[in-house]
Length: 371
Image 1 (cartoon, helix red, strand yellow):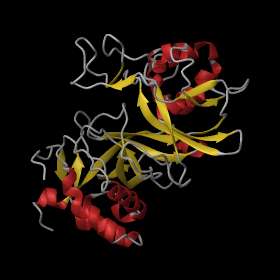
Image 2 (cartoon, one colour):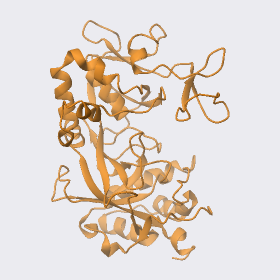
Image 3 (cartoon, one colour):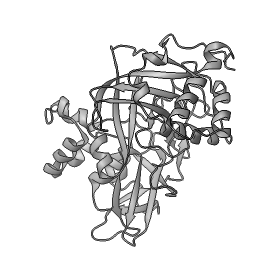
Image 4 (cartoon, one colour):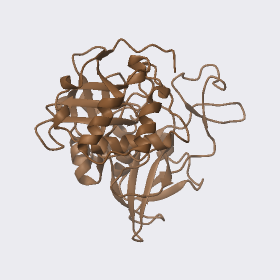
């Protein structure tokens, strides 16, 4: 087991201390956890820097594969048997923070037409991964992707350059959309279901990005005085872009990061796309976390009492860490997957809530292998 010590930001508590634990239905979370348990037979997850070692999950993963939970009671017993809850302390605030994301469902065409003119692109051949083995002097240390040239790697084209035609004529188009704003938000979400004009359903999901830092245009609009910060939601951003088509380039190009996609099967319409943890996301049970800090597969009980968009008096649910994102930074920061389609988008776009995070730490990690 890893020798990296547990972060002091974990403060052990008991399950009775978790708000709403006994009122939650943990069975969907168990099923999400079990999908990760089968995936890791192929490739293990990398351990995060907060000391939650991947190999400490071995007993829980094995048990979930061999003995699936059949109801809420057995799912809850599984988590209580294999894990110890710990409050995740935010670094600079009293509470953590959650936002939401979803999978858009949009109309699309296989071919460019008069109505469908906005492409979703696949990964270009000249886009390369950048790390310390091939990073040239002077290249921004943030950049994890670059463009190969005869003179070595350079920064890749950004959103403005690509939308102005830097990659035109390379045959990268996966599909064509009717709306630049729809395409932009697909980039933000990192995946989409496409209802093709020929009647088929396709899915695109993240393949790579141009490498530049993500900039949330909600913050841009707030800083410009266009939308009060407390009223920034996906819906208010869309409304502003629709009302100001002549300024769409000005605003959307401020987010220099550009996403490339790959096609993926729609094996189960009830589940979301396969994300960073390489398993399909489970609506309202998968959460994106800071991948550098946390280990995929970690269960998190999240208490956001002011968040009521999912139904009920407040959001108090067990989630499984199965995705990440450029804007998800910090130990008590999460992005809740709301599902697919417009209804999920309405939920996700309005989530900006304080929340307390409780990580469920594998007992072998906390108790030295005892049960």
